[in-house]
Amino acid sequence: MITTELVFVRHGEAQCNVDGLVGGPRTCTGLTNRGYAQTERVALRLAAEHRDKPFGALYAGPRLRLRQTGEIISQALSLPMSTDDRLDGPLHGAADGRPWAEVKTAADGGPHAHPDRPWAAGSDTWNGYLERAGRLLQELIDHHEGERILFAAHGETVIVAHTLLLGIPLGSPAGFTVSHGSITRWQHHLNRLGQRRWILDRHNDTEHLAALAQEAVA
Image (cartoon, rainbow, N blue to C red):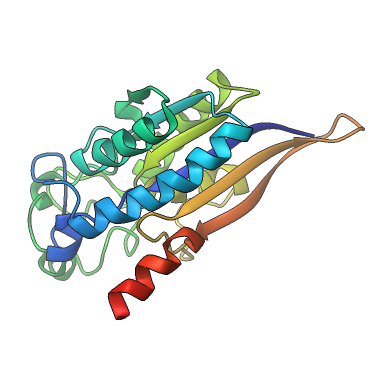
């Protein structure tokens, strides 16, 4: 039996992604037209699912691209959206708004390359972010035990969930691809023996974006 279910939607393509910039809270300018189209497709898919098996809550982080993604989903599902600072991405400090290539060159790699070292003045460390965000995600999971919860999230939030629920050691060199507008689904199972475990039902599911990708090629 599935008890709690967590569904993460990575935000649609944002202008900072296209420009190759660090899109921190000060400089995120929101979704591109393609990002809006991606989010509309995922919202239609989730709305059909919601009619048969309703979600209990919808959360979004505070950055503009997340709130825009969450608002589209909220309207499609007629489900109120809660903005929660605990779902924000890593703190980028002085890197906010700078080109990622510049930041990575100066730091000798991206956030994952030296996980216990800040990648810019005032930024998180990667392991510090995973630990903090994982602790806060666990609080939300505990609060919504037995419900189906939807998140408009950063790709990093999906990685936090995987790290937490798979028990991946901090500092692991492995990673996960998380595409814009993708769906990742975790389910908490309870079997007839009273045993519980989290199961990753799907990761980086972009089936709903196939037609959009074909339109871009045509």
